[in-house]
Length: 126
Image 1 (cartoon, rainbow, N blue to C red):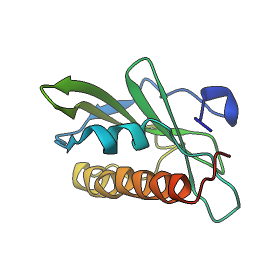
Image 2: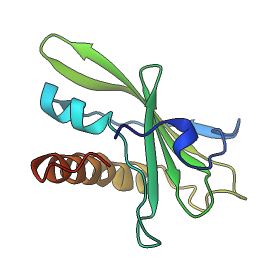
Image 3: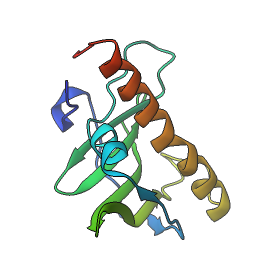
């Protein structure tokens, strides 16, 4: 099941945000898996993600705060992350180091892609 904004409680990305120097390309298969998003199934699942309007929003599942926002763009036969933003509101997200934001962001898309690929291979549509 594709995650939608209303699939989970969320707060919008605050005005205090920073654009990250982040580059990533995705195959068509990876992009399809990524834009399915991720709905947490248990307390251990720390992220909720959904695609809307060409962008992927990544929220902390416990608070609903939007921590990252990615704008995806097609370039030839692949997809790229054209823009990446991180929440810089200290009341919502403690880290203010640009490198920290980008390093965590490197892992999140892979986790979502892997989880959705695993679920699809098991025939899980929930």
